[in-house]
Length: 362
Image 1 (cartoon, rainbow, N blue to C red):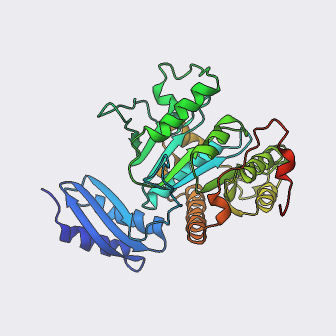
Image 2: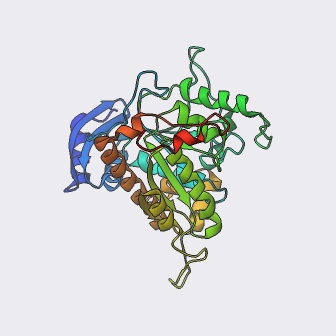
Image 3: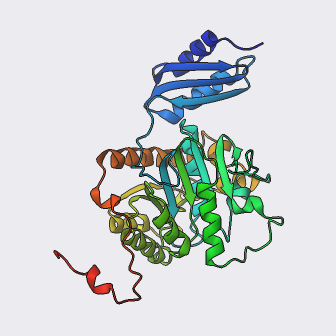
C-alpha cells in the first residue's frame, strides 16, 4: 500500500523541527521526493531521509532543496549545457588522496540534496569504480548517447567501466585519450545536474589542458598534503590553473594530522602546506582532513565513508568542506568576473610569442 502525501509531509515536518520547512512533496508509488528549505542542509536532509524510510510503503527517498545553487555562465556550444557547475578536483601530485577527496566530496554534495555526477578523468589510473563498488557497464538507449552508471543516486562515468580486465593498463597516446575524455563529456547523458565533479589525474599535462580549452569550469579544488614534497608540485598545478584561467575555488589539505587512541594529535607530515597553497592561489583553505583508517576501509569496500558512516567525525569533515565549497561557488557565480569569460591564453608559438604575454598596457 502506497504512503499518502499527507503522511509524508507530516513526517518530514516532524523530522525537521526547527531546522527548516517543507515546500513540496511528491509520491509516486514507493518513490518519495521531498523539497525542503534549511540552513544545515546535510543534517536536515539526513533527518528527513531516516524518518521517511521508516514509513510503510516507502522504497526510495529523494530530498531536494528549494534553494538551488547558482550556475556558472554557460555559453552557446558548451559541452555540458545542463550542468550548473563543473568542479575540477586537482593536485599536480600523486598520492595525496585526490580521488578519495573527489569521491567523498561528491557524496557529501549528494547527501546535501544536490543533483550530482562524478567523472573519472584519470584515464590511466581510474579509481572511481573501486571506491564506489561499481562493476557494471554503461549502455545506450538510443544508440547516440551513453547512459551513466548510477550508485547512491550519483551519476558516474569512468574508463574503468569499459575495461575487460580491471588490472589491464590503458596504453594510449594523446589523441585517443583526448577523444575518450571528450566523449565522456559530450556523449554521456548527464541530464540536469547541480554539480559535475571531475577527478583529474596528477600533473599538469594533456588532460588538464584539454579540459581547460573545451569546458568552462566553475573552478578547481586543489588537494594537497602538508609536506613540502607535495606542495612543491601542487604549486605548479595552481600556476597552470592561473595561466589557463581556471578559477581556484579553494584548497583541501588531506592527511593533515592523526589522532591516536589516547586522543593525542600527531602531525605526521608537518603542517602549514594547505595554508601556503591557499595563500599562493589567493583562495580559501576549505578544510583540513585527518588521517582516518575508516576512509581507506570503506573506500576499499566500495562505499565512501560519507555514505557508510555519515555521522562519523571524518564524514562530517568532508561535509564541512562541501558546504564551504557551495558557499564559494554561489559567491563566485553571483559576482562573476570578466577575466573568466575570456578563456585561456595559451602560447602555441614555440617560444616566439612569449614577448606579447609580458606586454602591459599595450
